[in-house]
Amino acid sequence: MMKRFILAISLTLLGAQTPLSAQEVLRLSTTTSTENSGLLKAILPDFEAKTHMKVHVISVGTGKALELAKNGDVDVTLVHARAAEDKFVAEGHGINRRDVMYNDFIIVGPTEDPAGLKGSKDVINALRKLVASKAKFISRGDNSGTDQMEQAYWKEAGVKPAGSAYVSAGLGMGEVLTMAAQMQAYTLTDRATYGAYKAKTGLAVQVEGDPKMFNPYGIIAVNPAKYKDINIRGANSLIEWMTSAEGQKKIADFKVDGQQLFFPSYKKQ
Image (cartoon, rainbow, N blue to C red; front, side, top):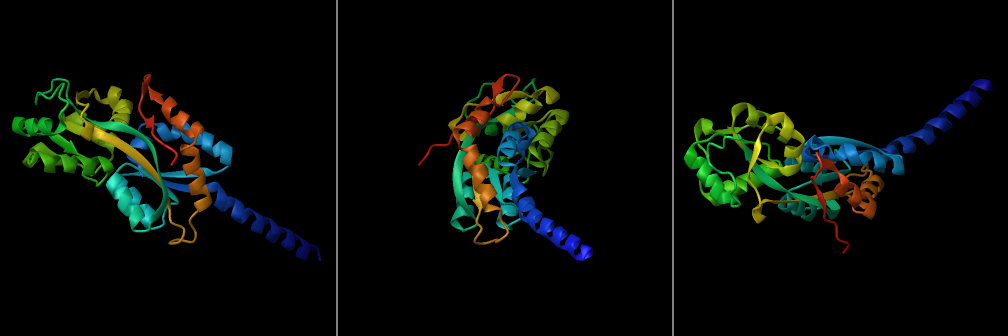
């Protein structure tokens, strides 16, 4: 009798714990810039404390982040490649997409600036000048949002560095900035990751201010109609929180060395 009682209690507790455990874990794929900059480490603890969820962050390039979402390996994704995001939603992989924040892309390089780009506000002409100078350029080469934007710039410029002057790293933004510093090369980066790595690399901003370098971020829930085990409640909770007045203020308040790195952009429809 006692054994049966203990077994019944154990099964009851196990049944009670299973949904609780599922609710507590939220899988988020995101671009390396939100992780490398320190933004998520700064703001997610508030969300976790409020909702009693644990956010498991997978930080990769935007292309890979969307692929993980497409395969149902995460519940929600936070990325920065608007055309790819719209395609993801149009194909039925994602729902409830919202603008979250923005910053901008910049070209950084050695303080000596061998290509003479300093002060340029025209990214296309700056890249043409870089190619003519035969200076070295390090590319993400990982189908990230930054990489997709870079490739669009080269296409518009109609030129691209050749041979050893162009290194396709296949790495995250922080690693590429480190490599650029070591090789005294230029690279395209989001301003947030640069801000977090500026002191470590010594690289200087050489090109900024072109409207073409605008860098918006969006958050999207994975479509639960495709994958029944998606934590859609948790995904929507994170989306609601990040686009709420509280979440938007947390994003705006995040700074590195006194500089704001992300600017809230959600507008209620």
